[in-house]
Structures are given as structure tokens and as C-alpha cells.
Length: 189
Image 1 (cartoon, rainbow, N blue to C red):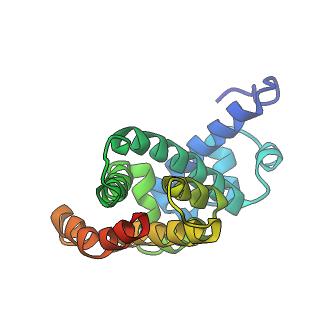
Image 2: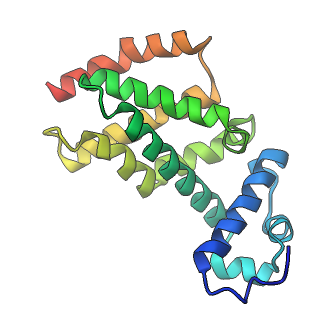
């Protein structure tokens, strides 16, 4: 990469370049094995420049997960918006999220043995992920704390499918239909 990091005043572009480089490293070496020096080198910037955008390795991880979560949620919203049945809408969204992560080598790397713990912790501690998931339930009578708990629980189910898959997609769909859909249906009743 060229030395134009400081020439651009577009911090968002620089941060995106850093996150793209980090994503490649996460996929190649595993999330836990990638350090700030590795990211700076892959992004073609100095460590000092990297630290101007991200305080530490965890902040890079969180920024990456948030960026990808926003992208996946935007795509899923388009796919499930037309489904009238709340249980089916949530199941379709959850299976769509699992499918999107599994289809992307840069994302599924987060769920390899040794790395899935980092993804699980970020997903449960993330206000961004929680708010995006809770947005699915704005048309209910649930209170904000109830929406938040439901969103965190559904995120845990998704993370569990990614870390420990079912036998196949039909098995995962059946689990969601048997155990998640009844709760969602009751919630929306």
C-alpha cells in the first residue's frame, strides 16, 4: 500500500482499510492470533496510525463485528420484511444470519475452535448488536428491557448454531420452529 494514510482526511476510509486488512488476517490466522502489529503491517500503515483509529485489538474486533452485523441486518431486513407471521420472520432472519456468516470466510473464521469465545463475548456485550436485534421487536408491547433480553437470547441462539452447528439446515430450522417460534408467537400475541 502507498503511504497516503495521512494524506487523506477521510478517517472512515482509513478505518475501513484497517478493518478489511484485519478481516483477512482473522480468516487466515484466527481471531485470537492476530495482533495490532500484524494488522498495521497488513493494512500498510504504522502502528501509530493504527492506534489513531483503534485503541487496542479488542476495539478492532468490535468495530469489525459491528460493521459486518450492520451489513447482515440490512440484507436480512430486505429478505424478511414481507413475512407476516412473526415466528416465521424471526426464524427466517436467524437462519439468514447463520447462512450469511457461514458463506463468508471472513466471518465464519470467528467461529472456529478457539475463536468462537471472542465472537460470543462481543455479541453479548454489544449495544450495536443488541439494538439491531431488538429493532425486530419494536412493533410489540414488550418493554425496552424485555426487547433487550429477547434480542440477546436470540443472538445467543445464532452464535450457538455458528459455533456448534445442527446436523443440517433442516435440523436447525426444526429446532427454531419447535423452541423459538412458540416464544416469539406468544410474545407477539
